[in-house]
Length: 277
Image (cartoon, rainbow, N blue to C red):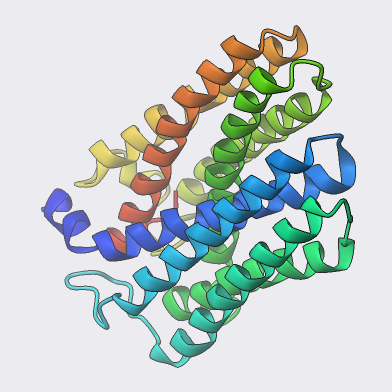
């Protein structure tokens, strides 16, 4: 049964959510430091959160089962060591970057290096669970986009709270992050359609998952994890533009839950059935 298969793969779903939060939120920190006037306190706090998520991701990685029962995905143990090293390195760099930000330094090389480590770790995961290039490329793209959405909405929600203690802060940082989040979710919708149309992941007939045994979870992914967050992201952007920061923060709270649910569904569909959505 699909529900039971997803339950068997909770360790891999947990990894996807935690590492996505780490990489995505750290990416927002680097972008916020270099391109906006976001406060040092917010950026450092979010960087430390990213380090915490990366550490939890490392602990999750050490507990991953060697075999995914009943799944088409066959993990390659050759990438376990490098993947875990990448997560530890991300912890160290994220903490260091948070400290540097608190000291009023920009440190673009350190920030770009940490982001490269995070994306590289996602690449190692794709090689381990999706196969060598080019077979693992679609999974890599999905992991990157899932991370951008999951970590991005978390960082955006935290930023919304910062306006409660920094009312004179320009709306530009939240507008920028909200706009990027909306486009990232829109890109996920496009990738969803392309993946189902091309049978990416397991080579199924076009759009067959919409009516197959996994149809319920595929439709939930589309409606709850993609369409609804896209609408809420647009609404959050409009309220941020009008400086209705409490409303924007409330909408982003809702989006944290819906995007996280979408990430869980996407990971469950991949590790349970080999479906890229």
